[in-house]
Length: 101
Image 1: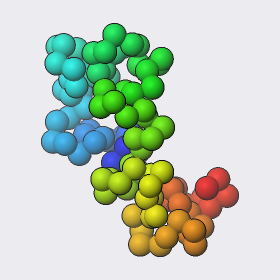
Image 2 (image 1 turned 90 degrees about the vertical axis):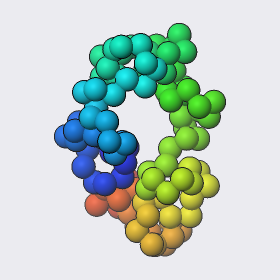
Image 3 (image 1 turned 120 degrees about the vertical axis):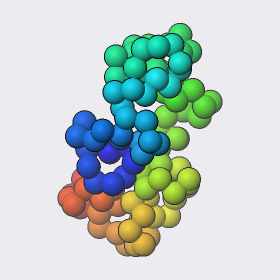
Image 4 (image 1 turned 45 degrees about the vertical axis):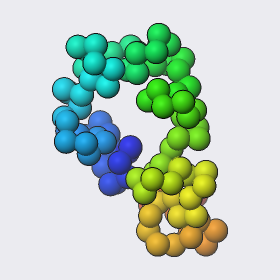
């Protein structure tokens, strides 16, 4: 759920809410829609081996922004954007299951 709206990406028409439907989105401009592209960011590294999928120079594990507030999760005091700080939130990722947080 890349945009943090509670709907899994595979069920959304526009998973990142940028106004471009996923079936048309072509991040690297190579004419191949991302869902069919083995190298979405066009850096020559296949998606399954790429640690920076969006090509912004920030490794994916540091680039995650669950609530879409512009603050990466590793710096965010409230990663799910529910107004409850992570240190007291039983469900930090907003999945409804506090056992895996």
